[in-house]
Length: 376
Image: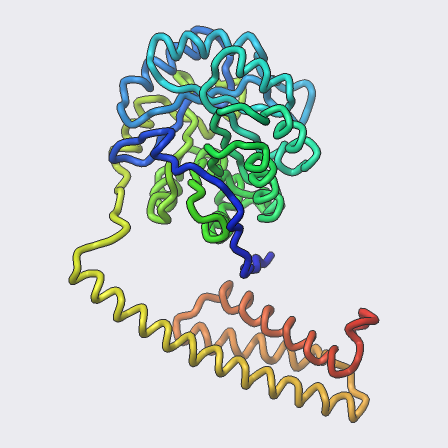
């Protein structure tokens, strides 16, 4: 699976900076609370413990749960809004709830929920997002948008765009990872390059990381949280429950408020800039990279010119574009060479595949095959 960068800069967004509508102090924003509100006692007990941690600013709880199977716990619904009202009154924490239907929004507004968020399953459907955006026209409330289940940055941007066009300018994105059929370390693959590209395309958009859904388990929450902060994400949404082992949903990824406090205490918040001496040294190294990149691009350009010559030679001699034996030789040789000079196999495979795809396209153009979609 490859992710391609775009030259696009989404300059039409109107976004109010996060610290103007949600002051976080010296620590990145922390949103926490149970995956699902299960009972009044569970919600209030979790909230009271979280409120003792000054870094937690927002209490989250799922009320409407989009479950894969109808026999699963699908949330307490509107009843939980009364519990969240009590949370605000007793703790002073702001509250946030996932909404998926217009009536969810109307109920949350009636109960003075402070922040809404759109879940990954909603974001995959532009019709659903537009329905929610229409309800929110003229409403002054912050909205956070989780990435869609599949790694499609255009869907993510589209959801943010629909809300922004509806007048929502207190806007944030939530990176919760992407579904991938091959489950390894993570429940949802982080694919960090996608939220980074989102930030590049929409300057000023705060991106909050949801390590709970990326990890799906407690033991790697710290390393994912630290990486998110190292990538200058604006905050963390981490699920917390007074009795996580017996939670009705996503028990394996929730932690107690005490464990959350321990996790936050061990995170390192690094500076985005250093002292003048550091900046000077960094700038020198960056100039070296700029020079090398220019040399690399020049070499790639020369390589593609030779690829085109080969394509013309194949055309003149009525030879197919792809010779699989040659391609296998290239893969084997370059991987062996790369391993000897410290390049990872995964990186080299992706790099070689991209070069090969571009080479095929150029040779198709020469042979006049591209419009017909032919490929040997």
